[in-house]
Image (cartoon, rainbow, N blue to C red; front, top):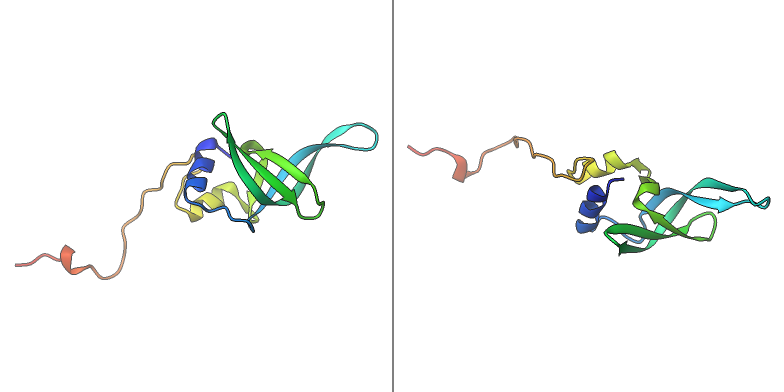
Length: 114
């Protein structure tokens, strides 16, 4: 996820306590090897360190606390990041989409008078 897109989503207050985020994190197995594991989490806190957003997450299946950066987020509420941004009329780079022509009846202000 780009930092610009994440900043726009945070400014629109789209993240709540029950937002489910799929992310990966590094862990160590019983033999001492590190590997990446994917899990679903709920948001505990969103912080900003040195112009980078960090999420403090609580795992749903494993009851662990995870600190994730914007690069490690895979999906939000089961949707890819591009699709989630499309709901809020944002491009994947964080810029606003151009709103198309609206259909339907025209308001009285827009009608030409003779």
